[in-house]
Length: 72
Image 1 (spheres, rainbow, N blue to C red):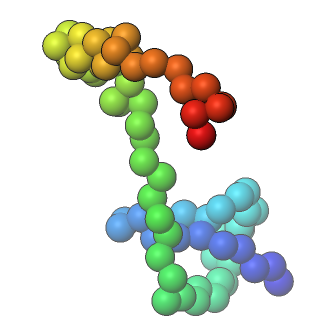
Image 2 (image 1 turned 30 degrees about the vertical axis):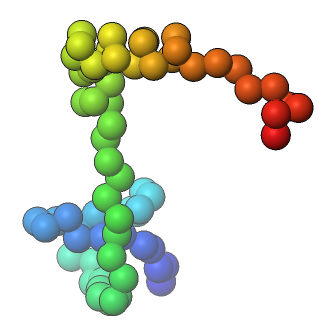
């Protein structure tokens, strides 16, 4: 007997890791009062800055100045 972690994605039960289960093998499923935090895919936001936003960021950076340690 083994124990594995997993979650329900709304349609299927997804196990974390590889599990060798045979056809007709009986299982025990326990529902916890914990929820899986979905990982956000931020790749879709990369490179989506508009030209005007890019110019604003560039201007803000160029207007900034380096702070010396002695100023702290």
